[in-house]
Structure formats: C-alpha cells, structure tokens
Length: 122
Image: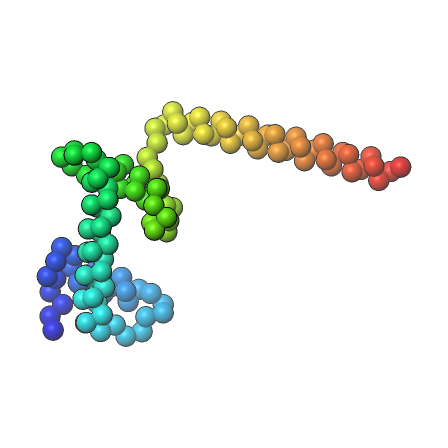
C-alpha cells in the first residue's frame, strides 16, 4: 500500500506527527492512512460549520472557525490554540479589568491579614 496521499493531506506528514508521540512505537501504513482520512473529515466538518457562520459569504475566515470552536463543546480542546480574535483596544480593556481585579484581591488579602493579626493579639 502506498503512502501517497489520496486526499488533501499528505499521509507522510500525518505519519511523522503520529511517530512524534512517545506512546507510538510502530505505526502501520493502514493506520496512518486512516488517521489521514479522519483528519481530513474533521477539517471538513469544522470548515462546514464555520462556513455556516459566514452567512453565505464567499470565503471562510479565521473568525468563523474560531467562533465555532468557542461555541461548540465538541471543539473545547481547540480553544487554547484557536482563540477568538480580538482588537488591541479590546485586549487593553480586558487587561485593565484584570488589573483592577488583581488590585482588589490584593487589598482584600491585606485587609484579611491585618484582621487576623489583630484578632489573634486579643
């Protein structure tokens, strides 16, 4: 059986990725072909769902696929590597909110520390 790709993904690259796992000792050609086909079907499914969000647009964009990943629990494992795009202004706003939370938590910790030390001296 040839490892020449019959679909969009090159089988030899999928095989290389599979071999990079410390748990994989021997990988047969059949299993690499099946994994390649599974990857192609997965990409096709994710792309179709993203295209539905494009509302009849002509092209599939990152934002569409990222939105599918954020909305659908089936793709939860992709959320860290495929975050929803945000603008720099949105990022700065989020940072400001986070800094305010951190300051508030620090103040709460300081108050509780001073309260426990004064309570223990009585």
